[in-house]
Length: 363
Image 1 (tube, helix red, strand yellow):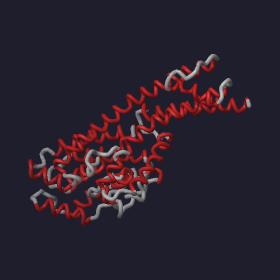
Image 2: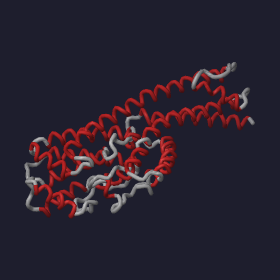
Image 3: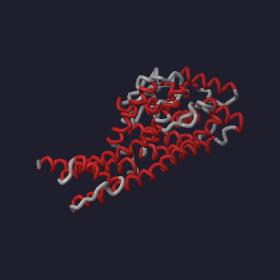
Image 4: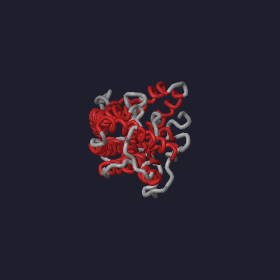
């Protein structure tokens, strides 16, 4: 019996320590970290949502269901912390003797108050006060956690919403470049790409250190942070490869910032990609799709390079840097249909590990 109680104390202490470490890694650690406890919360919730998606018939219905996935998973995480800490302390209280399992559980309520009964022995008193302090700390962590999440979400969505003015909804390369050309020419493209370079840097930091934000959907059903970013990257690649205008270094920097951002988010989800692809590696966009955009822009007078074949090779050389991760992430978050990104899934299914494909079979 002594051995059992010793094991209960050690096991309870380990459970509490592991939970606290998981909370720190999930919330406080300012870098990407794979947290098993977080996955243990989000995966079962995704199974529930997978079931709910079977009852949806339209994209709007599906989007309304999926919009709840990120917030519910995020709020369930601190409750999982509290339950595990409560369980661990119950085992430690019971192991010290003088309490039945039910009495130990009641005493473990110190996580929420200062316990439901007096504890006369010093060891139980020490545990009571440490548990109460941990409970208060976890609640404080949650209070500070949620505002930072929604602050990052708000920053992300501001530029996504502004993009709709010029690129449409869903956004596309042709709409973006046509509107820029018709309204005020391409003089302001560099300023736009500079803002999106900063946007990609911010998204990289927030979406790897707090990966739950990846699943937070935009307010409108056909709007998505990922498809917006993809449209900007394709536009920057098109400007760098196909427009017959002076070289725009800011467009090239935007592409680099974008593919680094998407690659690092993809790394968290264990999505395989080539870190140093060849410019002539295949991409998910066909030459016929590129030609349609070329012809559409030429039809409104946009200056384009005469050597279309070389322009296509240059465009593909830029696109290959982010093609795989863009399409794969579109599957992970079930992004709304958009040209050259989420509409690739049927013909070019990405290699995403099963544990990170919560909506497989429902797309």
